[in-house]
Length: 209
Image (cartoon, rainbow, N blue to C red; front, side):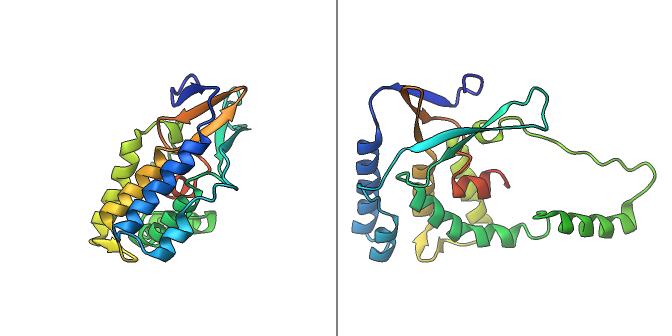
């Protein structure tokens, strides 16, 4: 956590209540100004009685020297989880269509792609290279994540998706990326860089794009 400088220590004041209120006010404003429908508003708004801060846990990266830990933020009841899931469902088909020729989704597809490629290009001098990005989820600026989604939509040529304008989709994306909080060892924290590993929106787009 110290190395990445991705988390801000907020001390002992629980940010959950103002976070829920801020999220619901934001969504209400979108509905009131007719940027989202009543149905969408009801689906995305936060239930104050059920909302919780995300829970941070760590998984060991056994394949790396020293077995470093991967931070994963589980936000199944976080204030932005409904927005994150909805955006993922809205944008994932778009990404899948645009990336169908260049993205590899599983090992079987990889083998088939290599077989087709090797029929023309493979030679005794061919080298296969793999790369690993250190601290992927906490290395990119938050606004950079919004830019990724913006470019995806612009590349598709769409001005709106499911009746929601591009600008509103980007505003919702920004809300998901910039409102990630958790509690750990007596203090509350806010993530200020990157996206949370555990958020549907982050997993789909920032890791793949």
